[in-house]
Length: 544
Ligand code: VG1
Ligand code: CO
Image 1 (cartoon, rainbow, N blue to C red):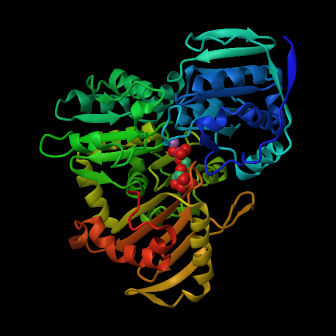
Image 2 (image 1 turned 135 degrees about the vertical axis):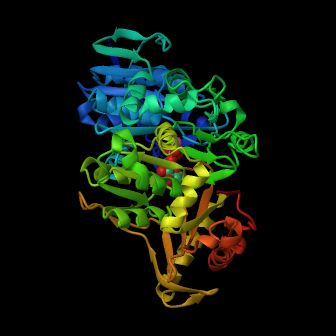
Image 3 (image 1 turned 120 degrees about the horizontal axis):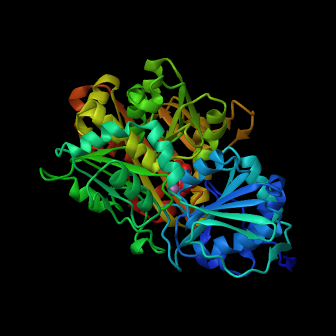
């Protein structure tokens, strides 16, 4: 099979963001755009020549076409074995699991996660390294550097491969293995959780659950694990068939976009437990009857209860959270006498801590949690963790969380997103805040006294790499915080995220409404950053 060199020209907008390169589908369809980025991966990752590469995506529009391009280019770039999920599908955590299990040299995940799909939607491409995790910044910067000079790429001529038939075939010298996307992942989950106990909980008849796959990749995983293996009744998984346009929806598991399970878990007839995952299966939302568990609380509850779960019976070594995530887990870590690390936003920053055994659990406020079982956040894993916990403690979700608050206090939490604002105004807003930082400590904002104000900088404790300008933090004497940062996953304009946290030790106050508790901080945050004047928005697009 002959490899040909095709001429192109470098694109200057291929720097990966928080989680890979995300653009409009239309941008990826520009001739040579996808190919150039792929060539930059092959050029910068020399291990792939003669090595094993894993490929799969979340099933969104352009997934199948992109897999075919990868097959042709992998063959031309000397990849020895290409492992592909059947149908071109692999959830992000399953891809991580497979890279690790088969000791691949890396993986390419086709996804724009929770961003909408379809011809007018978004597409994305992430590269994961041999540890199964998202490429760290040194690697993404190297890939980016290559994209600035790539002016030709290698490919072979080949008819499209049938992605739906499991089995092996040769493409020139390269072995292509089409595998069941679910099996290896399901096997790993069965090792971590007490499937027998969960099965009993479901067969008892007094426990009902719903899982919303949001027409995205977790459908096949949830059908197999929850309904087939754990015996949840048929219909437990809703929107379980991956669709190229996610049914026209936003595959983002929050109270706004996963509203169906919010409704079906409310009232006396509501189910006991409900959960949802995102486009690529790495996020999760956890609900009890009439009860929403914030992702920050979910992480803290998991850390406090890990010893009750089969795979974590021996305890956890340490925990980590992204900087904007609430400090609820810090309190648990302190109680357990283990380390708690604060990292910049994005899973790649947990990689070294996980690899080095510093931490067992980690999470982000953006509906992401995970452990050292893979190197990605893992939506279904979190759901199974909660299911296992509910089966062990035989309490409701609300009881477990309120007891947790009783012990540790409650970190009220909310996030305001202002989407699609002008890039210049967003950058000016952050720049202006940065200027104000030196004068803030010691001053009073509303009734709150500022303890510290900085632009978060992180030094990786393992490799010493430094990541600066990771978000503006304003911490108050009473433990409350305001954090501002700009999203690194959007494809249109800028998204300003404002994260707010308030700590309340008094159990009498734990039942208050989040919106009411946060109102004074919201006022301070919006005024300090002059959000209305600078962005023209009086209200956020989404509140989570
Ligand atoms: C967002 C979240 C971040 C998460 C990232 C990828 O990034 O805030 O916590 O790691 O998405 O998640 P940003 O830069 O837009 O705030 V996913 O599920 O898109 O792979
Ligand atoms: Co995701």
